[in-house]
Amino acid sequence: MTKYQDNQFFINNTLTRSKELFAPLNPPHVGLYVCGPTVYGDPHLGHARPAVTYDLLFRYLKHLGYKVRYVRNITDVGHLESDADEGEDKVLKKARLEQLEPMEVVQQYTNRYHEAMNALNILPPSIEPRASGHIIEQQVMAEKIIEKGYAYESNGSVYFDVLRYNKDHHYGKLSGRVLEDMVSDARKLGRQEEKRNSVDFALWKKADPAHIMRWPSKWSEGFPGWHLECSAMSKKYLGDHFDIHGGGMDLMFPHHECEIAQSVAATGSDAVRYWMHNNMVTINGQKMGKSLGNFITLEELFAGSHELLEKSYSPMTIKFFMLQAHYGSTLDFSNEALGAAQKGLARLMGAVNALDKMEPGDAGSFNIGEFEQNAYRAMNDDLGSPVLIAHLFDAARYINTTLAGNDSVSANDLEELRRLFRTFIFDVLGLKQEGDRETEDLSARLVELLLNIRLEVKKKKDFELSDRIRDELSEFGIVVKDKKDGFEWEFGE
Ligand code: ZN
Image 1 (tube, protein in one colour):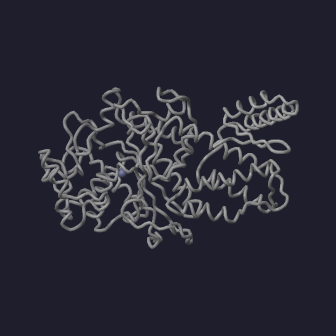
Image 2: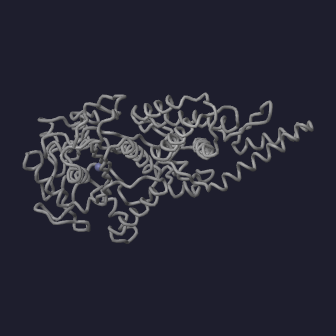
Image 3: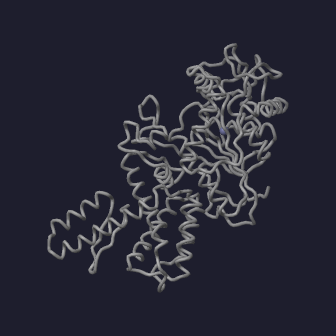
């Protein structure tokens, strides 16, 4: 694998940030691992944010010519209700409640997840491994860690020895947590059980008699600890060292911190060159949670069937809304914000259609070369999709002005503009046309018809009716600007 760690890049936590992130190299291979969903429930907003973030990264790297092997796992075993190796397995609990075989639960929600991802036009990963399909790899890794002296067996379970590891390495370097604080917090809680220290985490858990997801091992019949699957599967498919590991901010600790410790303990060095974390979604300023009644699934969003929703929002509206924020910022969902995203998206798609109707003429006022540079600069600066979108809106404004006859475009520029506009909207941002073209064209023709009638109305000095037409159109998000010799209109932002 070609190294490119000289370009320190887009990490919103520990490493240096550089604007020259994707300095064009001869296309090397890039290994990308992203923690995928634990499949025990309907896909929801919390699933969409990482999916959109890493889809953007995957698409952009590919657009730049990198050969990307994108591994996104499915967690189907070992994710317990609490991070402290306690509680019921999430999949198993769902299986018990729905009286299904655990693998039926896994299949059902994996299918649902894929459907939602498809609707969002998220590219499938290159490999989508399941934790339960890699039990042997996880056992081998646990054994290796025991061999190196960083894990121990206790009563049929295997635990990672965090204190021992921290003597030689640094536990907490990703999240910035301090081990002494964690140890003293744990002591206050008084938990001890079979671990040497409460901060130790499970690599293998001996199964209770009632626990039906179990596999034989040299230690006991049991199941792997949640953190181990990602270390074992990334190693299997991307090697001991790979480029980028992504996931939600909520996974930074303990999940990713533990992944680092496991890899370092097993191989002696860090597996991951760059960590990348997407931020969380809030709803009307609140954290999303079932107990708060604001837990919205993607299916509910697409159908508008949750009581907090004023209407339905299309998958591309959701995607565009997420892309309008930087992946590292929190993102607040509200009907107002989604409505604005819907209008913005309609404006961009309107400009895509308008590009087809434009005729070349004299050179215009828009600098295409500068637009191209700005667009790449935005993306190269920590995947700056909001800045890219702002540049696309500038281009859209120029496209609409030109189509209305108030600016012009040369043949070369028109070709370039068509290419760039489509590349960034469809290939890089991963948006797609949703409405049918004919309906959109018909709407545009109807708006033109109404506005032409309005001109005649104005000539007859019926200003009341003329204002009414303008005001009612504005309620549909159509902005009308009167000109000396006619009018201009566009979908408002
Ligand atoms: Zn993971």
